[in-house]
Image (tube, rainbow, N blue to C red; front, side):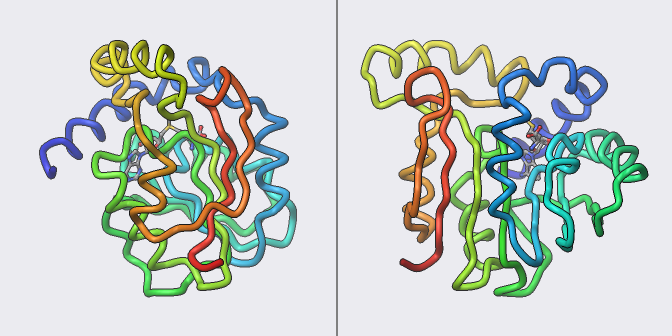
Length: 203
Ligand SMILES: C[S@@+](CC[C@H](N)C(=O)[O-])C[C@H]1O[C@@H](n2cnc3c(N)ncnc32)[C@H](O)[C@@H]1O
């Protein structure tokens, strides 16, 4: 798993300069709507080049982590012009360096397609999220439609090779395996492939 993590990290380092022009999947309005629900102390996992950062409501304390230093460098540039209280750290989502119950909200957008061991990453989020907290996500995942699912399975080796992103992750099942409950879910695009999720550690 260590080797795979290093390979994916290198892929994101390589695509970092092009990332913003490639990033057309998540509409800015989806980011805004998702982040409206962020509260208190927020951890953003896989903050990337910082595409979400200008969409947070004011008054939050935000920590953004990513394992790619080159993606983080672009996020660092962004925060210079933002008023919010934002700190960035290089860190692997699979080994979060925070104590248990540290955050009110965790945010992840388009991240769990590429975390090498998604269940381990989600377990770590479950650990650092307060029992009353919310995990807010926008993720693309395997469709429940068998024809679309077959197409995504066939496409997957290509997308992993190009960008490190899997298009056939079973993210809802992965969340449940990590101990989360689905409080709310909305299909955003491509039938049920792109979804907005509100997951909670306890119902
Ligand atoms: C597709 S980009 C999305 C970036 C940003 N969240 C957005 O919405 O534009 C995925 C990001 O997740 C990061 N990432 C993937 N696996 C990670 C891990 N194990 N730990 C930390 N960051 C990770 C990548 O470096 C990359 O910046």
